[in-house]
Length: 383
Image 1: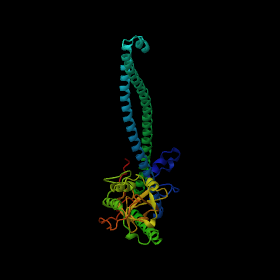
Image 2: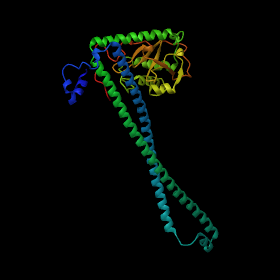
Image 3: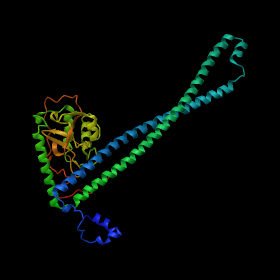
């Protein structure tokens, strides 16, 4: 039994008799008492939930960026409308004063009949009509400006309210990710070095079996090692390879750390093609390609909810930011359950000549468990 659970039990007066140094006989088995297979299944489940929450957080972050830009644009337009409204009010006031000062009490028709020079008076009446038209236009601008300023003020307030709601939702999602990663950290911290090593071996063995079966199925086609990327795909892949060794950090998109979709979106942005920020949106919006047609630079998407993504390297391997505690690395394409693949530049042709990027030393090393050696990860950054 964990110390936290034991403390919780000790808070109940009716259960005070159970607060001894030895756990009750019916207590659920702790991490030390569970099989490697059960621990691995639990750990992978926790990582998957954390990554799902991370991608949801990333999506909200993108929405919040868009809403902030919208609110800023509305505030700018509102300031312009208010300035224009002030000018229109000044024009209207000036015309009103002129009308008061120039008033004679005679209608334009009477003034025309009494004029010594009717033609001149008629010309003056045209001028008066133009002035009157200018006054009418000023009044119309004033009325329209007031209406537009009122509409923009309402839209700006709604944008601010939406921004506040998104910020609150983002905080909830951030706290959820932080809590899930804390659970992973606590689970790993409770394991012995031998258990951590056994977990590593079990996951490596499972990945090797999955990769062997995946390749043998022919899902990648006949000769995946000979395919070439597009020019942009080559640039995206080169960027990703140069990030190998940088740490995973949820919500990060470089330059010092990445999460899975932060790496893929930044790599393709470096290649000159903006793509959605999250793995779900990459799967939903980008052009899908059969796995048998994969070429370097394409994106491989994982899990039924499209909550993980990697860049295809070629020859059945991908470059990915695996999960917390790990680093950007090269992994077998079947390290996680494959959902499918997408291509950010479906209109581009592959290069006629292509040399795969040179991988740095240790590019494939490191455990996808999210820890290295016999050390559990440090305290999780809850941002």
